[in-house]
Amino acid sequence: MPFSRDSSRQDGNRSGRSGNRYDNRSGSRPDDRRDNKRRMIYHRRKICRFCADSGLLIDYKDSKSLRMFTTERGKIIPRRISGNCAKHQRILTVAIKRARNIALLPFTTSIIR
Image (tube, rainbow, N blue to C red; front, side, top):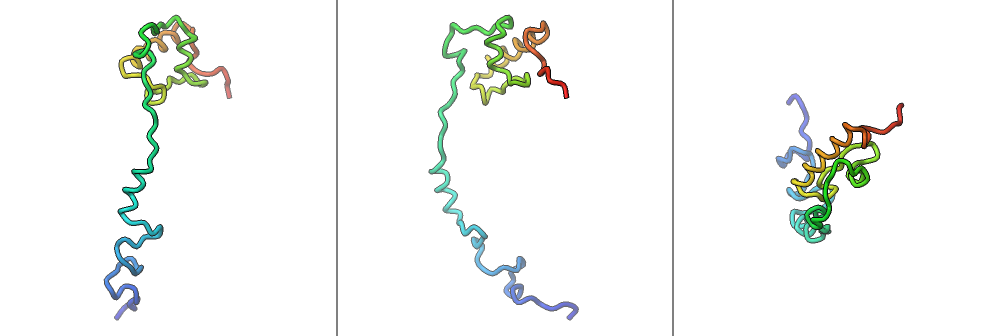
């Protein structure tokens, strides 16, 4: 024989470890995954503030309200974080871009490195 046989490989286990197929390092079994789903914390769904209050309007000239939807670096906050619906997020994005073009909002921060 050109090589010696390892005692752990004689039983057909290629990984070199003994045990059944659920014998992993953490000791968890597939049943534990279902328990994790029960313990998940559900967050309250964010609602679009423009849909909830029809009095709020998105206007590119109102830079104070548009600043709430941009980061300190000047990036537009995505809708999954801001909670806007798709329709109002598109309108908001256009308004922010218009305000940037006429210098009401900055494209980026003024810090130069």
